Image 1 (cartoon, rainbow, N blue to C red):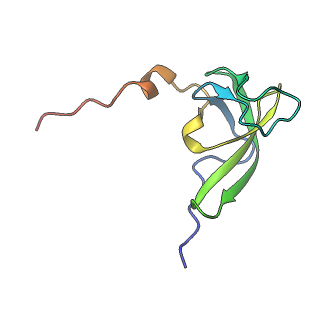
Image 2: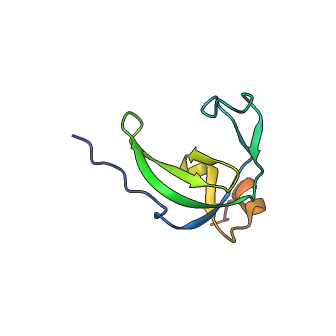
Length: 94
């Protein structure tokens, strides 16, 4: 049996969208592929679940306009420089 991967973020933690978040069809009252939250939009984690097949945490984040299920790479700690997340890491010379 594989151990369940522990979440990086905690319930109640303030976060921001690390990327633009679009409707993937899970919000039936909104057209599919419509932008829901722009990168940098503030939110709060209101629930943490687990995707069993992928063995990854799934976060329910309340962004005020919608509660959206997010993966870890789609959110960041509030105050994170989102530009730094988008830049490829620089290799350090030995």
